[in-house]
Length: 234
Image (tube, rainbow, N blue to C red; front, side, top):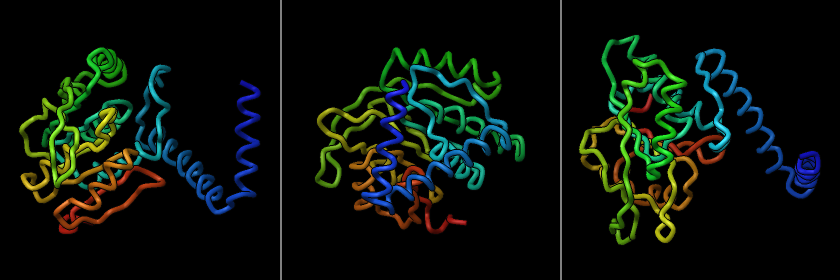
């Protein structure tokens, strides 16, 4: 562990000499990460036990989700790829629900059946029963379809609902790396349809090129890529 930390520190120093602009950006993101974590945990009082078998929570991405939902107040949300995001999205929906008394719906899709069972129990341990009640967990596998002359992977068990918030952060298909769910349903979604994608660079680039509506785009470094409809942007 000591050697690992020493190597990490050494690589950080080297980066400051080789590419000072990039190093400065990483330093800024680290500061934003700490800021986001403090806001989530102590201002919004969203606390959870970090599960050792999960990826480390990225508080920059989690805070981006929290801000979007609190600001735009979507009432039917879906995430494809569950994790700490499930808690933050559910808590943000709960906050809005307490303000306007309009009950939201939240679908959480997962490709790994064993992980889904584990994650469902984890959620129950970290959220109140009434908040857990907002979430509908769904197991899905992937199928390959062609969209805009590109083979993409699609969730087989995708709910036939009208969503106003779509969050994608899932495991890619081994051969076809682009996730096509959000773009496949775009034209049939309501005018306030918001899309957020974490990582998944090929998917993000495909969406930038092929989404048909007019959006305000943000993210890509400090947090996930986000598309807010121009007509809905505040």
